[in-house]
Image 1: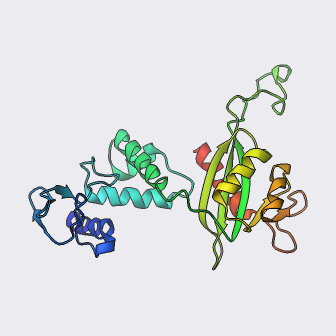
Image 2: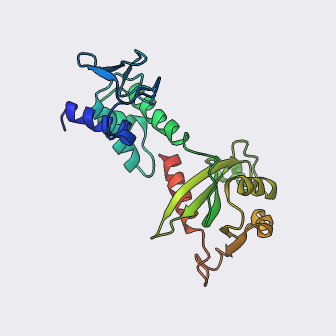
Length: 250
């Protein structure tokens, strides 16, 4: 795609609700404007506001080619286990700082979704502990029991994943950071982010015991099986945790 084609494609995404036709972000007018071709900007005839295709988006302050912006979105989206700013800078042929800001801007946009919308249907919950690695000492006499050692940075990432109604996989995912898997925090997360009477699948960790009072709780014993006889499992959450772990290593 040429730069002009990339610009037109970005415009079609930016104003997809209006079939790619510009909408003034100031007054909302969708019909009265003219195009300033030398500056790639529009000026509204109703309120005289000047705007561009990137106005009020995460890319509004970047003077990058639209080809670079589209490539950044594609590469970031396809990297299911995360991508470093160094690798992104090499792929886009831009400076490290530019790639670093771009990746964080895209991550920021993911957090601007409707966080108040509750998950429903079949929801899986699971936690993965991070920040708990202690490098063993060289001499065996100097090594400590890492299971009992104090780990100030140890945290658990709780993932909630709503299963797709049609087909496999998960449609929506929410994550939370806790100091430990405990009944109080788990119950508060479920109450705020999972619709009542939903079906929740977890492992046999005691932190999920209180969910039985408000939800249809299904549990799987991972010491015996990955999935129960009636289909109870939290494999989607386990999959997310595995990819999060790979992202952390990367």
